[in-house]
Image (tube, rainbow, N blue to C red):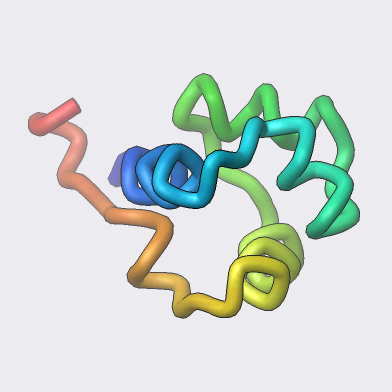
Length: 70
């Protein structure tokens, strides 16, 4: 199963935020943000920090795709 963060990137665009802004707001590091940019898995702790920072739910920022759809 593949994780897609496209919804998150759209939220950042809508809010006029850059990835580095989210890093600071959510308290996550640049390495983790790079993993997300490459559509790699991150911890649920990281997802939780982002959801708290953006006042959203998990399903608002990620999609789970079957491996044949990536």
